[in-house]
Length: 183
Figure 1 (cartoon, rainbow, N blue to C red):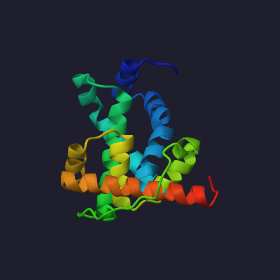
Figure 2 (cartoon, helix red, strand yellow):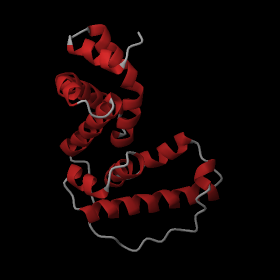
Figure 3 (cartoon, helix red, strand yellow):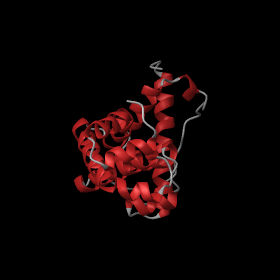
């Protein structure tokens, strides 16, 4: 089925099950990857996707009238918010409020270029939940620290601290893996 975004939305609004299934399948793989970056649990990622699509189909009329942005970006935003809601519900996000001195061993930033995306994702998944959440929102999704602070109900400085600590942790992990020859 090849449909324009507007036609797909129109058909979904008419409760066309084939169009709804097409929309779900069109975004599923991407949404699963995004959700796993936040939740690091298959079942939770699946729950986030199902809840997100429930919201998508309930709010699609509002999206179509507003006519702003792409459908894909809107769906991803809903999923990110749902993933964060699930993290908060499980009370698994812990944030360190204060910045301590972080010593990063001499790191060649070009080392990241030699790594496979799967290796980088694996390293991100191992970050503590607070670090991982802020890192994903800032470095990957492109939210500002102010937006992240609002989304997570934390201060802007806490968001910045979490990002710096996540980056520090990743750079040290990169050095360890390079020194042990695992990359």
